[in-house]
Length: 440
Image (cartoon, rainbow, N blue to C red):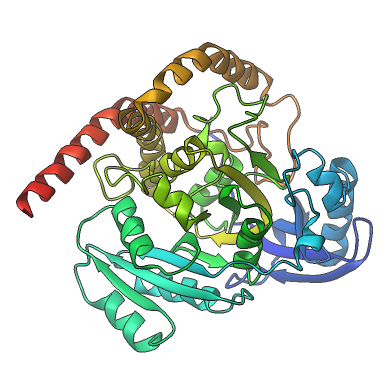
């Protein structure tokens, strides 16, 4: 007997004065509906800084701040609470990158260009641009890349509503990586940040994402935290209950000179580094790495993998990559079952397409992949066997507890996508070659 579909979950932000302190504020996420009785998913902040998530139930007549505050204090007691310095103690210090976040606040973030690729979604784009124009970063330009447009809606929105505040770039060749390369070519910033048109950026997002570049000249990429903006449909809840896009709250530093012991397949485990909706590159590092592979990404036959390819390309060029949860965006997950099916297939295809692209464009990495593969597979099997033994809190459905089991049909779609990925990448490369030949 199948379980009933999950009911909508309210998504809110809860700020505490300290790990065991009183509630400073409780509010819906930006653009989200008001909290209502029932299940509630809360981002826990400590004096404004993202620290954890909790999932609780607020009954009619309950004080939501009291209920969620108690859950948040209990969660922080389980996971720490730890200071910035203690969190960063697990990260190998390099130069000034070991400074706690509060100490880094005195560093001026570099001039940054934010690139947003979009296609025929003006309403979502307007919401994203409004959040980007509200950033506390001191020196930023915003570049919108209109990818293979069918109408003038995006052009009209940017040039009329956001004239003189947002730059418009048209790229007629379809594909997210092509659009990102076009945005990077037009951008003037020392750092290039990328996000999607279906996010709302926290006001401190860009500063938190780019300050690390001022601290570490060898840093090539920074990624950040992605949380759900809404959990209103079964598809949205199912995606988030099985990981979503979040990478946790612990800072990580990935250094090709000192590969992490807990990732035997490094740097090929690019999915653990971050996601394309929340990433920034030092412009010089991205260009040295060759930019994004135009035969990858949504809008191409490869279906995805453009962000994963760029992460590995930058690491392979000798640069470091940092993850920080203080750089936060709220992502509007797709809301239908068919969207989730497409996403599952695209994830699988993008994974093997990115691996294919990496080996095609960087064949010197093949021996490293073959050497790491046996340990990587053993590690993956061990992780699968342990899944569910220690459920993590703070996620809809609790990871590993199978409150909302991942349907086998989606797993099959993901595996089919993995088989297709190399074929899709080959098709996308052939199509790119044809376009290049036709343009001569």
